[in-house]
Image 1: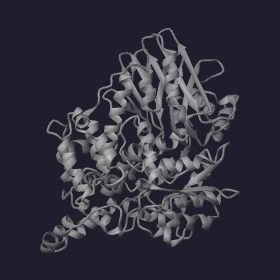
Image 2: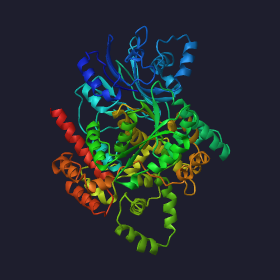
Image 3: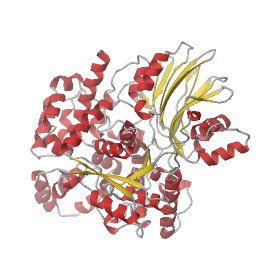
Image 4: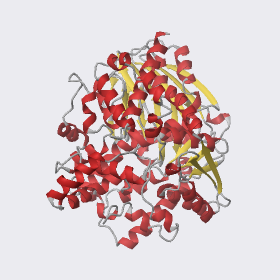
Length: 637
């Protein structure tokens, strides 16, 4: 696992080595074990590359990056892991390739030399990389199929820059720093910025499953090498019991693949279904007790899931470690994380993910997690919302409009209790009455409630929902609307929110996190299956649950879905109040030219009075204002 960066001058001008070093220093947390840089000049272009290394496979100096071929013709910087590298290594040896290291990076290099971009479909793993052929004066950037590893890039005035994180990219050159208004509005609506956009107008986030070529002639349009499979691309499904067995076998294989490491390895165990399943498979294929890590809250029992994690740890005999944090410890973790962000990111579960990553890193270098299970198998409450809404509409109108909805508007709402949280969810369910499932899904996914929309000024971009949907859902079949929604979330919110969060939090502490539920073979088998195998009669993750009924305690299989959260709503009503007012100031808010400061204050007052639950939106505003003040002050200095 590494951090990578590079500056390619397509006109052959000199690349500043000091800039490369600065870009590398900005990625030190991603790879504290080794740093390297190299400048490769040809007759028509100059390529400068920097890499930092977290040594996981073959920690010897033979894995140093940038890595060049023995003849000096090819060069690679690579962030990630290819789990099937041993099989690929054997295949390459049969082709006459000789290796000088035991690293997967050298296997990736030799695979790209022999097979070119066709090698991407041979890799099982996660990656972001840059490859350059000095003789042909051609190269390419690439990102893994699901977007587990990040890669930001910019093409401006005959220069191409790329990096694992935006601060490193901005260190390479004096790029334009104009903010993208549409991205900022989307950010406040959903809490993250989806690919291919970033917070900056000129910086792009390379989409998952794509590569982009470059040469002295310029930068090519991105090429998609992987897309999620559709039902028409697969054979007719076998019987349901056979599907359960095949799913379990596929997860078992994916977990076993991800055990490959030359450093200590463990797993996150939140007590939720997905992490429990990963731990179950990992324990079954490990010769000794595996290390598991869980976080709990000393002051907020509603968010504390340690008792569920203990059930799984005891069932599989893991070497279990609980991290009990106080409010003060959580609050102390917020500012360093906000200072670390390369662009605004409003998912507050970044905080507990960082805390559990820090705890895990004290004992292991690699951790497995259950991320991706909700999008692939149908785990979020909003996936049930379509049937719930249809059932609700069958109630008599006098009951819905005369009693239920007025009561919901009067009821106090918050995440911190089962009843108030249910009120919050049902209010969100009634946001959108449109019959289009995709339109409803976007409405339910938004962190900006309808009553908060007046924080956007008239001058703010107002993207048409249907036009946006047409762009985002192009190529996704809609003969099974719910399955199409799952595919949509897998393509956009999963890499933009969940995977970005895990990468940020784990690499902040130099921890590599692997996600077996996003194994490509598993995706190819599960994604095309009809939605009834995933969400059925009020049961979420039907296939995943039934495949493991005889493995896990019923308390794990039958418990309601609960996110990996901090009590941000309560923090904003109490200990974060001063920080919010000191950061979300009138001058900062009005500097964007997009938002109404007085409307934000009204929403904050409603939240504090529990007339509405706006924690996600308010935290996103706090992050945005903190980020822009820090970024502008650092540039000014």
